[in-house]
Length: 315
Picture 1 (cartoon, helix red, strand yellow):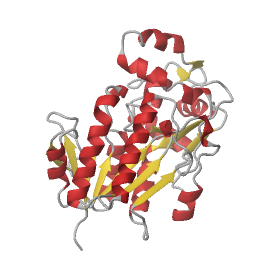
Picture 2 (cartoon, helix red, strand yellow):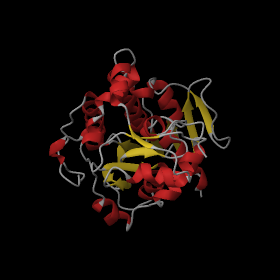
Picture 3 (cartoon, helix red, strand yellow):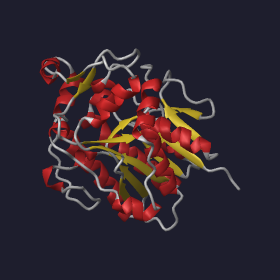
Picture 4 (cartoon, one colour):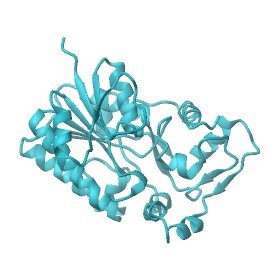
């Protein structure tokens, strides 16, 4: 049987790295489109030097690929307006010429307060932020390409990512400081306000199982429940328990400090725009996913947090 090939865009990021490991485990050939001097890849990957903004580079890298994992995002929330849609256009064009299926990790940014609880795949997408509007436009381009017969698309939507490779995440930038044993754990939301998390290996496992599922359509969309923190304390209390040190305090995230930093720096300004996700619960329902797979891949929270802290150099 011929070896299956996947192209990963964003292979050095959280979900890109998790998908790389999961596909390699199953014997896929994995190509990674990376810029010159990018972070070190798994030596089993085939690096392809190029830029996800360059349609010709993406097209060349995708030749012969069965899957394109579009896991690339501007780092630090920067330049979404300028970069996000041209990158998905390059991926769609590459899928059109190669016949590859596009796999996209979806976000909860697409939804406003009218989306329901829990939010299903057909809920109205009326976002309340600029980044949410861009993500809605991105998914509409994918759906239009699928309806025109130009691409097959799989979207798996989940909450805030955390995991060993998720350095650019709320877990690693908001709750704790990576690189050393935490001296304080920060809680961004108020007690009683739920928050949705997604462990990266579980997301990758879900995507791979859906890829291998027979009877998929040209445009498939699934929601993961992931790790639901119903009272807003479960995640931070699990971090404290894994650290095994009751003297490590849990304190509110100083949003006032982030607001001041936002006056002069891009990343804090973009993070402030997403504060609403910590002020009201946004919960995805996974009924369609469970119906398709029979279950949702789910690592126990304490195991997932321990692996994440170890991967971030905090244990």
